[in-house]
Length: 587
Image 1: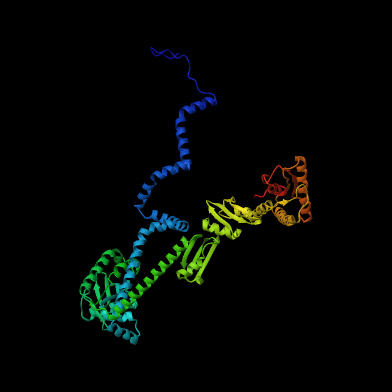
Image 2 (image 1 turned 120 degrees about the vertical axis):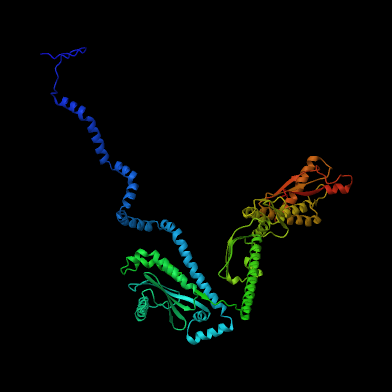
């Protein structure tokens, strides 16, 4: 039968279906358990991911360590090996970091210990020094020699009021020494032996005099200058070995110290079973009881001490004055050396009794060793090393130029803004050498030889003027040379030979022109031919006298170049001549 329908709702005519395939089953399973599976997957991924676990643990690690540490010491025991290895590795790799971290704690303690040691040494030294320069000090020194004791110990014996030499902290029930401290430079006794002796004496007194446990000895005399003060506490006994006569205030201090120590170590004393390790840290408290006091006496400083101090001050003053003078002398020498032209100082030191100098020096500069001797120092104790360099001071440059060029007499040298100016007269070869070498000299930028003349060129010019001043005269209308004219021709030949030699030396093309002349009488063509024949006549004679033909030339001028106006017969006779022209004769 069909199901009844709900009013207002259409009837579902389809029948309920059951999934039949695997795909449908999978879809149904995803719908039912899908959200739970996703949460489980996320939890598994979270548990399997080390980075996620590490992050979560880091957020609660500090609180966990605090909580666990409040319960027991397992955290400290677990971390101890790791921390030990970490500190060891840090010390091996970076010791500086650990040292910087511990310095604020260790530094003050080290400084305090060093300061206390130094102050003790200074106090002892002052005490010995005060008694060294007096009659009493000499007596004590004799006593030290006689008894073979150190002088400081003898002084201490005579100047000491009291000194606490040793402190023993003894456990009452067992008689064991919990801690023991000794003053510096004091003979050490066996602590257990001393403890046993005190315990035996205490027991003897209590047994012999029927006293209670609280009663006992408080002072024990040992010899003429030592005593043992005993302070008894609830669980411990404090025994102080004292040299001299201590004040009663010291007993109160010992009592206070004992009270504080028993209060400080009450737990350790209650649980004491023979291990003295927990009481090692009491050494600083016990050391504070090692007090001493010296006699306060106003001593007058010995006159010998005043004399010694005066001598030392005088010696120090003389030494200081000597050192000051030596310093001033050395400073003056170094300044002089630095101001000396041509010297550049790079090192000037005195070390180990020797002088070390180094730098640059121009060859023309003054000798540094000579300056050293002049300043009053020993050159034998000097180690000097100077490198050569060329200073550009005009004085040094000119000296360098003179040394290199060696100018002859009559030659002037001047240096203006790096330009070498050479004036005067010098041999031709020297001039050529100077023009080639001068620009290579350090400090010379250019060379000017405008005012420099060659001696050979000057001589050539002089010879040319002398030749041009000579005239060879001829008779009227002839080419015949009179006997009185031959000396003139010989003179010309001598001068021409010198001219030719100088021309070869100077490598110059010097030309000598032999010019013939006539007077104005007769026809011009005839006069020109006659003048040429006269010049040729002289040319031939000069050749026979050894003059080379290379530099000679002949020309006939006729009456074109008269020497004088022919107003008289004498003037016409002077125009019948042969003259000479030498060119070029200038530089």
